Length: 69
Image 1 (cartoon, rainbow, N blue to C red):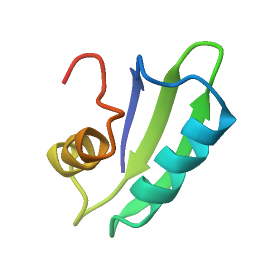
Image 2 (image 1 turned 90 degrees about the vertical axis):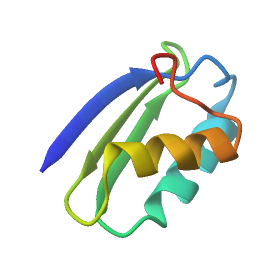
Image 3 (image 1 turned 45 degrees about the vertical axis):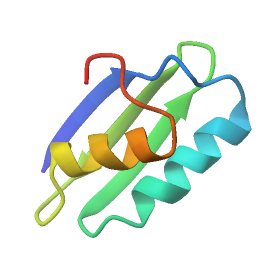
Image 4 (image 1 turned 180 degrees about the horizontal axis):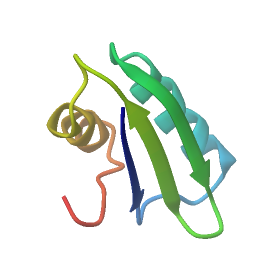
């Protein structure tokens, strides 16, 4: 299992976190998604067939791109 913690500058409220959880949760292989509004961080855990590139692309599509992507 892979885990990544990253910042998402566009997070502003719990609704943003819910959107991210819902969208990433639809990717096959994503096991867990958590977000913290105060720190604007997201933690994602995944296994194959999911991969980091796929997660980044999904976040970019919904306008929540990771800070380091």
